[in-house]
Image (cartoon, rainbow, N blue to C red; front, side):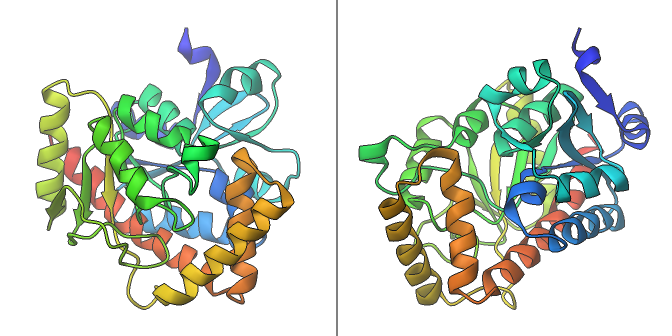
Length: 304
């Protein structure tokens, strides 16, 4: 029944059928997260890094109502340049498919489609989380509930700094989602290597990480894992500068009444402007680093 909704790129299907490592990649970062042409250049480079580190990339998106698992060059360009691409999370999938329209998949939607296809590792920039002032707005990303329910390991540079990281970690703890630091005991905060919050467990190798992931799913402990992989030092931003930029962007978003899924793209664009584009360089650098670790993790997991 599911097959009629899927369009799996032949290269990806062959790798899955043969039990070779595959890494899922989201498309929201292409359609809503970066300007053109950096978005398509980054998407292609990330795929190249995944290949170079021993795995097959599968960028996921929705085109004409089809769940595309692995986009070709033409489709990547389309996702990068088209204006009519919806931001797709769990709640949106049935309607985007039924209406046969286009959608860029968020962390939550990419996890769902990855799990359907049997892809175990997903690489992104940063996860969504509990927004600041959530005690008043109840603005909590669907990414967190997906992590609690869907068996996909998510390699990221932590949670975006625009969020309330402390509450995000509390939410994940409540729902039994392991938060792991790759070669760090501090949870990274996207643009910076430090957040002031500790991870649940530090791991120093992909082998150690793969063993823990396999054990989790062997025990039928439902849900994913957050693997915090800090931004490389040469790309990280000054902690105070980025936090001041975030505070300014948050004040403006509240003044303009921007809410819900429009919040993150607005804030990231505003921060890019405030930091004279340096935040975009950081974003690209951390995604490349995550692709490298994610590919190595997928390769290790494929041995089991």
